[in-house]
Structures are given as C-alpha cells and as structure tokens.
Length: 210
Image 1 (spheres, rainbow, N blue to C red):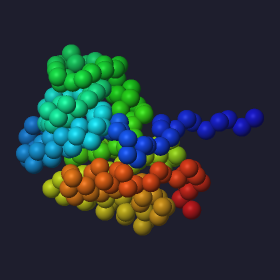
Image 2: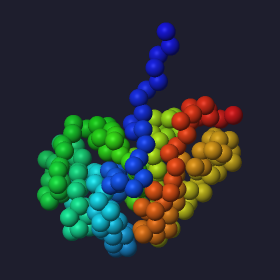
Image 3: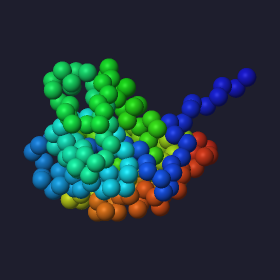
C-alpha cells in the first residue's frame, strides 16, 4: 500500500478574514534604523488589519520593533522562543503569549505551522535559513501560502536575482519563481498577501527539475 504524502503545514488562507502571519526578522541593534522603522510599521499595519503576529519572540532589533508596533495598536503577538534564549533573557516581556520550545527546529515548525502567510524582513543567517526552509516546503507541496520578502533598502534584490539565476541554470523550474513575492514598501505587504493565490496543489509534480 502506498504511503500517504506528508501532511501540509496549512491548507490555505482566509482572503479577507484576520490572518495568522509568520514574520521572520532579525535581532541586530546595529543595522540601519530604517530596518527597525519598517518592522515597526509592519507590526502596526498587521495589528490594524486584525492579524495575529507570530515571530521569534525576541525584544531587540527588527524582532522587537515588529512586536512593539503590533502591540502599540492592540494586536495579538505570539513569540516562539527556545529555552536557552529565554535563559539569556532575550525574550520580549510584553507579548500576548510567549511559547518556550526546546530547540531551533521546534521553533521553526511552530512559527510556520498554521500560518496564513510568511513575511521575511531583512536579516542574517537565521532569517535566511527560516526563509529558505519555507520556500523549500512550498516547492515540495508542504506549504501553500504566500511568502513575501520585504525589500527594505534593496536588501532582498540580490537574493531574488540569485534565485532567478538558479532557475535560469535549471536547478529549479520556471514555475518556482512564483513561490515568493518581492515588495518594495511595507504598505504593499498585506495587499500582496491577499492578491497571491494559493500555491499549486500539484506542486510535487513539478518539484523535480524537468
């Protein structure tokens, strides 16, 4: 008997209803202030739209800014934080809920599971690792919802070009260019999420390069 395929992390998103949004972002306090300002504004906009923000639970950098922006507008903010980070007092003290997990792997799963969309803000290797996992799961038909890269200060333009080079060099199929959307302005994030259709149910049929 053929084994059933792995269960998808989410089956689709509610177009107009309030959404649960996974935000990948950085904790650096030393990056340009525009990154934190953009993160704060994103938090405000998500809260104003009634969205629940789910993020890594930190209090510094863009992490703290997106949480602070949402909380300032009365939004629900859920942080997912590994216990060792809580021991180092890296967690945000004012969240709606802070969930402690055992390790980074569990954190990534809880961030993505049940989310209606992913927003990747500029960040370092941790942010990029989370983003690439989400894109990979989408390619494999295990995640079906929008993945939006906020291109503050042109940060994601080189990555977008690199991924398109991977398509040109036949490491991915042309359809895979639709797995993520690049937006220039924070005000465009929610409209882009709402305008992005559910990913293909037959994604596994073209996951392998043809």
